[in-house]
Length: 97
Image 1: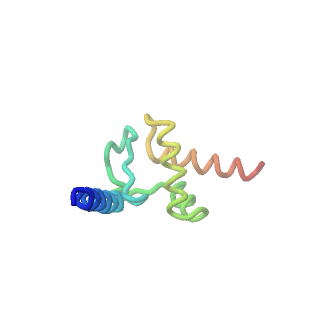
Image 2: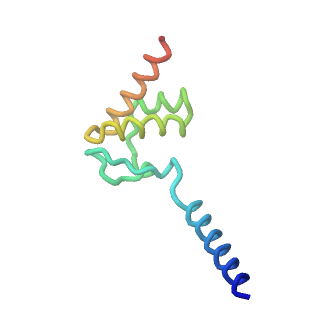
Image 3: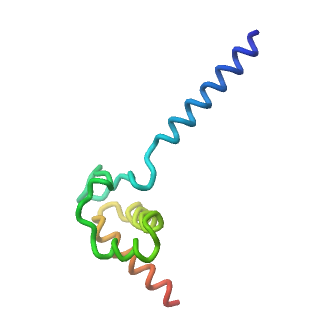
């Protein structure tokens, strides 16, 4: 009886943890920690830079977001626009090689 109860509790905790994890933000809800946009969700950004639009056109939304976030993590003091410009520059540079 004790083992059955323990297994049920663990299973319930696992299911609740999976639901909590699934409910967390996806790439569309990544938080920008750069100096100009502290804690603003991506959904609320109204001014996409030209570089960001070109990245999304070339790579798709999720891949462009991952590239920009990678640059943001390496350069937390820079703005999102600067990071989009750098990500596009890096992509074009790497494609020339």
